[in-house]
Length: 411
Image (cartoon, rainbow, N blue to C red; front, side):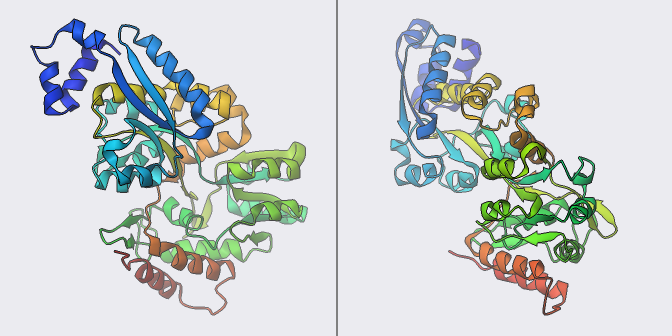
């Protein structure tokens, strides 16, 4: 990006003292000769790649001297460590998308200035994950955390894998089963998300669900729950305990399973030459086919709002997440891209699991928002559906109980 734009960006985002430096009194020679000191946090497994990308960034701005220090910081712990002392945190850091609400609330994240580039180049779900209250606060880096359908193509055709009805029929014919975790608020929420139902976190930490009502598409929550019951009661369906998917795969009983990239090796071993994956199938709901959504997770790169080099920090964050950098990240670490062009590349499409999760997240992946009190009631709700609602409790009552339980605040 041209220096002229960068200086304007720095003037627009830095503190008052730095704004003065961007004004008429500053000289071009001073801007280019003073070293730019930055600290970057990246996961341990990303250290080599991050340093390589930083060297490319320096080469692209050879008229400026940079002192960039790369520290080791887990993406899962970035929020916790930053909130201890935000001013001592890195200028640029990677973090998991489920941390963004807390970081924004604590005023730790700098607003993204070049929103057009970010929105045009990345899948919608990743942009949504980086957005809070309509404002973009981070740069999408990856989009490979979520679930999709693995299937054995030797017994299930690509067409049969497109709907739960035909998928279960194919498994039944082959004497196999389709496995999925239902006793989990992460997995069972996908059916509701696909029907345009929502979940949001309240100020007190409780979760607001509209699942006991009617979605914007005119589908009732009871219709969704009945659709899940129709699947779970099919003899070709196997309810899997959360965390036990690898054991279920190893039994050899499955012809298909809803899972994520973490089970790729186990599934490939089980299905052999039939190893295949795709976006989640549609399911029958209120007499029509409805998409099965999924709770998608993303990795983001943020800029510390306390950075003394906000302009350069944003420039670096944008570089670390651009098409070239995401291509390198995939080539070296097999990380699923959020960048649209990289996701469409032949190399990514050739990776069975990544192609599937990319396709799922691009169309029906939803950034799940849920408070701490959501998970146990949602698990119980899923267990009841997985067991076929043995007490024959009214579906409306089941949903009302769920919505009431998760609404309880935690703070």
